[in-house]
Image 1 (cartoon, helix red, strand yellow):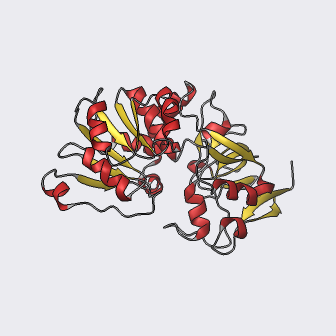
Image 2 (image 1 turned 30 degrees about the vertical axis):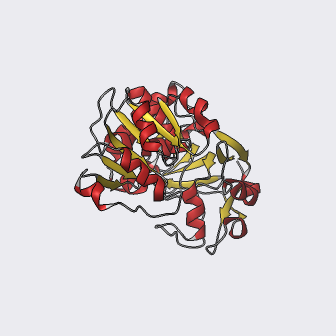
Image 3 (image 1 turned 180 degrees about the vertical axis):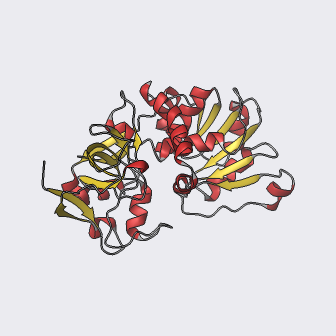
Length: 329
């Protein structure tokens, strides 16, 4: 086995491309209760770039290795480890820094992935599909045939919402900025796909024949979020989980007074921190089951080796990509 590993590191906050470097370190050794995980895949998520920039609510102690998400194979276990075995494919927790060849960590924080799911897909189940699952279960009690609406529907989280909602029998209105995405999102299970604009409310009404929409999912903010809120039925809930537009929500008083809308938010890292181990495992089970059936495969635009970290983060920062940028080890 290699006696050294490579790890991506940043020492100060700033533009990820300028801040990131790859350094060599000793191969990790497991203490009692720990396992060494050899990484297989780790995506570059917006939150990773934000953290390097210093714009994320959680700041790692510097110097730090980024990467909130990833999957790898257990290479070695320390004493008293019973929940994982050498050879298991596992999903890592969000506070470990996944952009490295291998890492030693507490074994009881690892989630074992069942057979039949490829490492590259397992590496991306924890943030976007889990966020989508929580969005569809924790805010409004949806029944089969009920409608929801979301913006940024072509994002990784948006696509997970489409697939999970379709699988559970919910109907989705999916709002995008580019019309060329329509056929693709419909093929993934989106019932209605519309291009965002001033007439959104009327177009939604026509497409859903006026059915009440009780759940809105906002990952953009600004005017886009307001247009979603205007499409919701009285007493409905708008859940914000992203701010791609970098603009605040401005809610007219009338939407609160006359429609009694509820505005909520979710940060999946917080959900993980507050969930028991049992709750985390129970939440992964339906996602694993869907992944085994070929759902929840996050689209990948390009895979980079860790040695090309600077090029990878520069690529990930570009808009209008067709999928995720990932590290493959």
